[in-house]
Amino acid sequence: MRRLPIYILLDVSGSMRGEAIKAVNKGVQILISSLRQNPYALETAYISIITFGEKAEQIIPLTELINFQIPELKAEGIGTSLGKALNILTNKLSTEVKQTTPDTKGDWKSIIFIMTDGEPTDDFEIHIKNFKKAKKGVVVACAVGDDSNTVILNEITENVVEIAKLDEKSASSYFQWISDSVGISSEKIDNGKEVTGLDELAPLPKDINKVIDLRKGKSNTNDPFNSFDRQRALNKDKFGNLAGNEFDLAKDNAFTGYQIAILHLYTGEGFNFHLPETALKEKGFSIVRWANIPPSIEEFKGVLNESCQLWIISDVTCKLSSDYIKVIEEFFNSGKGLYLWGDNVPYFADSNAISNKLFGIQMSGDDFADKVLTKKANNKSGFIEHKITFGLDFLYEGITVATFQNLKNLTPLIYSSNGNVINVLYDLNGKRAILDGGFTRLFVKWDTAGTARYVKNAAAWLVNFESKMNK
Image 1 (cartoon, rainbow, N blue to C red):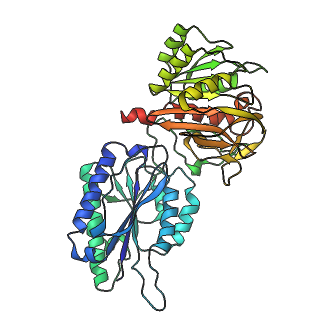
Image 2 (tube, helix red, strand yellow; image 1 turned 60 degrees about the vertical axis):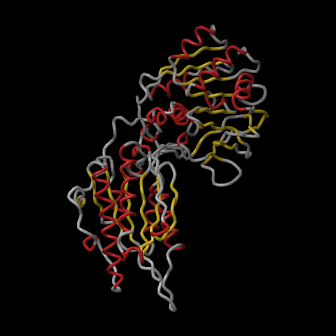
Image 3 (spheres, rainbow, N blue to C red; image 1 turned 30 degrees about the vertical axis):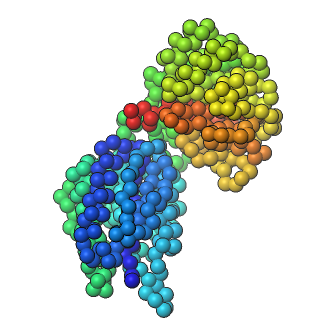
């Protein structure tokens, strides 16, 4: 039997949180329920869903309607990985869809529906180019709201439609329209024909319009994070990173009113924290810093009560008593961010005391580094693609660094040029922390690749803005 493959790509990024994702879930239910009542669709239509947000994945492979399990979609995270979703789709068009051979007829040409409320934040250009080479049928892209970039969607397909506001009513109309269009396509192929364009699908509902005037979208003033528009990426710094604060994770002044407490215990070699503080203030953060020795426990508690995160830069001996560590533990467990900085042995005393208490892990060693890292493409060195490395293609690792083993519930972010883990993340149960074995990045060779952007991104991530928006 020749199948009619239907691929549906859905945006599940953080901007779809709330009413929008509820409407999409309801719409998918309407789609499947309606198609199951169509005898032509029941016989030929196979449905796949690919989601994209912070990551992209095919959550349902091509499945016949009778066996289709309706998913519960969740919107979360930062980023819109439409490029990666198109890459997955391109691969599935060649592996899941049966191709025609001299001996047998393959499946009918796939029909593809894409819905997004923003613009891609990944390397989408190459994936669009490869997708357009794939063998397929009609492709329809749906732009939701004013923030969607119809210029990019038009690069994917000439069939771009839009929904002004995504709610249960408009989502129901859109997914019912998909159902009606699949029904028409199924009936056509029953007669040995295929649909070849948007005008051969079902008529568009009144609340869905074909896009005539293309736009790049507009920024959402309530969102503290930048979108990654590579069309603006004209300039790079001397290390190859995109130049300009619009390529940082957070918008400038996005975190005005947010305070960071800095317990700066190692101040040797002229380390005065001036450079990181200047960078953090670009995003609106205010800084309270104690140098060399901790404040009184009462002052410490008072400042932490007003702070969104705590950064600790360790010295060679412990300066924090168990009472301070208990306060830090309570601070972290309340959902506020924690950054523990150490360096090569023995510059990790207090960080290790805290990380051992909270995570059962310590840094150790004396790993000579002093190189510029790239995004990790092998098992030897580099950094992982993450919100913290948003806008970074190159990053200085520090001079001599400490490393981590036995990571437990922590995730590696940076591997040294020697292949050892030097930076790990904790991101569970609404709590976030960064453990770092290279504090020399904060004051040595500051102008080397990516340090300022990394510091700003790390602070923005530790705010845990997405978790707070979900409460």
